[in-house]
Picture (cartoon, rainbow, N blue to C red):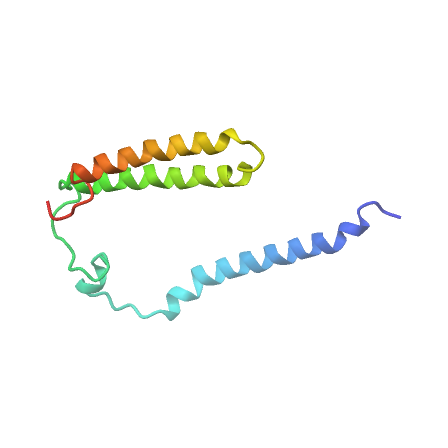
Length: 125
């Protein structure tokens, strides 16, 4: 018995999938341009900006620091949430993890209160 015989159905499936993928790519590159309507308009050629009228100035305009500050705060507290999962898994295995996580949460709470006091979370400023 041939040692590759059990893998023959898998090889046939891979070959069939490759042929179908190449056929789809060839047809989409050849047939679809002939089927679609060619009706370019100025409004259709503008980039879509989520329902907001597109801005005609360049891409190099300045953003407010608030956007970067909120992004950094999000990353900070997102990483905090990522550290909570391993702690929850090993909480009963080690008694010291409770105090370590309590000090970690206290440090983050101090940082959150500081950011709140500085107005980092206030969009009206």
